[in-house]
Image 1 (cartoon, rainbow, N blue to C red):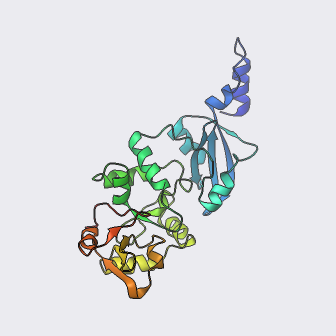
Image 2: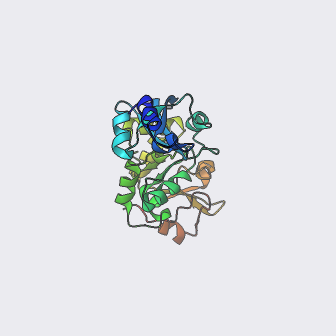
Image 3: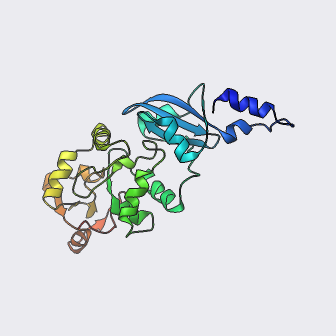
Length: 248
């Protein structure tokens, strides 16, 4: 449905439409540059609702939300800086269509800093469902606002980036651009090292935590499990909070 068709329908009403009705029944959209190329972004009066890369944007949006799309004159305030920096900084999101569990998953993912990654099991634990690791993957696969909620920062424990709504290659590209050393993660995983500890601070972290990156080689110790690190006298980092089920 086009904007002209909507306006014609509204004009035919016996009474004048209330203010803002058009924005309540349709979503606006813009095409903007993003870190993986041109993006199509839909937004409502509640905030950004959908981020899409590639062809088929209108069809995918209609199938998912059932709302017509109308072109917008300009992107919502804060969208371009958020895509560029990975920080929302007040940009509102419209997540009304997600389930409670998916909302919890997305809220957990929002806390992962730029340049760091967390395993799926960590997200499940943060979402209050530590055994729902597969369900976390499904929830992230249906993230309506990728890049704004950085599901690309959730990876497999073996150092492989894993699946992504925009494809595995885009995920790896995003992580490398943020400074994640994927080769190092794969090498550590191959050695069965999933946690790094400092004997000067007594703290154990995920390998990409900014605290772990400051550990000098002479004081760095690797562990397969958090239980092993605890047994050796290390306490979990309060920043990356690695208190979650250990990798198998």
